Length: 331
Image (cartoon, rainbow, N blue to C red; front, side, top):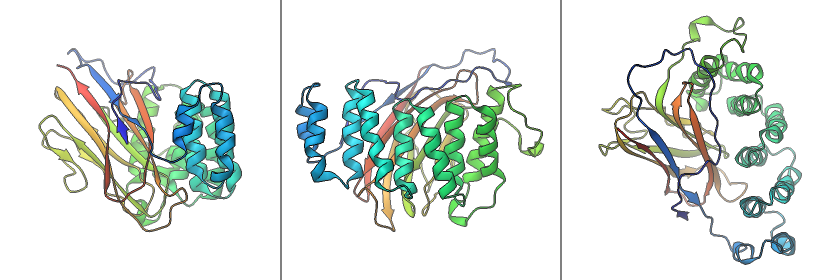
């Protein structure tokens, strides 16, 4: 279930500097509005009805019935964190790591949730563990690189992203390297004199700033998720319409990996851009009975005033589509 919510800073990051020259024209004002995702699960009624003082006790009382459910820990932690009981929420999240220390899908979910909770320093060792478990998957290095950037370890972030860009990966991970290269160049451009690029192929280093960017990741392998972005003219960018008349570009459709898929638009015209995620299907049994998605909506990507908001949600039914959020561009 998705409910309307005002613009919120679930995760926000902004760059400090850029090599891009300032424009003489006034840039359009762009606002991001996210939709709060509310799961439907049988255990949630008691958690939501509990007082703040009783919430953790109710979680403990129900835990025996859901001890092997990663979704239970995720939802209980979300409820605690939303009520400003962050430390208890993090304690509940720690159960994910203990469920299966070798399960990279569960660890990825844990890492994403820690980022959402504003705890990137806790997410970094989780993603380092994922990298060690799955060095053959480019997402392992990309997730880690972005987490390094969140804690200010820019050289480590750049090195991890470059590892993805230069690597030769399985064909089901097509275009992940290009997405990581785009992120690497934005990182270099917005943090001048911070990153040593002498070991990088200089032919690959070129920043491509855009007004709007959307990135979709998911936790389950062999799963086909689709990103849809509809512009103010009513044109939808998706795998069947990758290049829009306005100049938007959707990345290749990844049908058998973890993503990411991304959409970028260099110059945004005024109006509303809606962002949706579609669960097309999966070829494997899912760890939590659902697919966990992380979507990032970014304005002024690759520019000094870049801002990002992210949301994490779960989809349980194939062919399910959810409205994730909107960009509102003012003249």
